[in-house]
Image 1 (cartoon, one colour):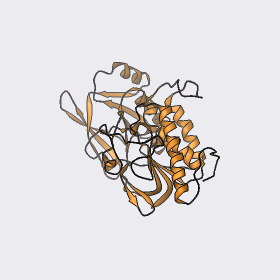
Image 2 (cartoon, rainbow, N blue to C red):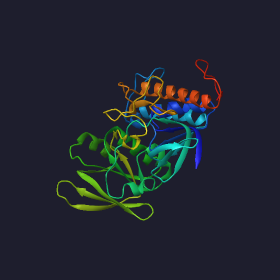
Image 3 (spheres, rainbow, N blue to C red):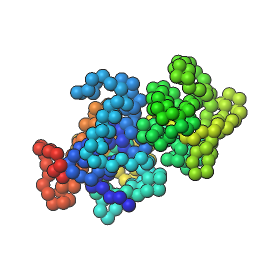
Image 4 (cartoon, rainbow, N blue to C red):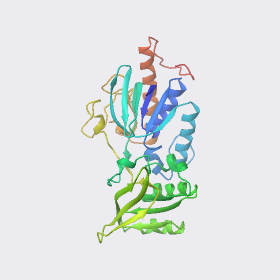
Length: 315
């Protein structure tokens, strides 16, 4: 089991910003996330992020990623499903069956990727089912892959996956996506409309999916080596209820310093009860949560808090 000084749950702008600040302070930092960039990767053009010329959300996330890794933070691609107190801080459990500990915990998971709700989906997460093309595309080369989704995120996934010489197909439940279908035809990508993924099959890895035609009810088997889900995002905080205080909207209640109802646990970004949901605000909250967590660790180590001069590697 790996132990970190600061453990961050979530890889959107809040989580990445928190990791930049905490790792820069010299604290051993780990980020556990099912994808990188979160909703930011769905934004085709960002014009109001201070200091950055008009760019895509995908490119902005790439810059953040470079900063995170340059300061030595660890990226762990998994989904956290539970959190509890431990002897020396906090312990989280992941869907992949792993356990990690942190002396301080930052909850910045925002909204999670929407699931297919197909039979065996959870079983194949990390074994052919992915919610992050930018994270997992390098593991697939010369494969036959299915992207389930539509819009800019699906097009971006197709583009990334084809860089590795993969054959890519796209499927969606709707039959009314003419503009999207036209874009895929221009890319010479097969688009299967009006179907839902009912079941995922395979031994140790994804081998095929069962697609159900929503108009006729007919089912057909599609041979694929992997599935990339691009269906948007939803808020899922049920797993954290009882651990920190949640409001009626399912958002984590924080104060101006990103502190939750449990000492040593902080939160940032869209998962909090702060009303304005913007990338720049999420990033700022991530920085605040990281600085608060840094001061929390300094206190329990018997050191004085820092209020102004945050220089590199002082943790």
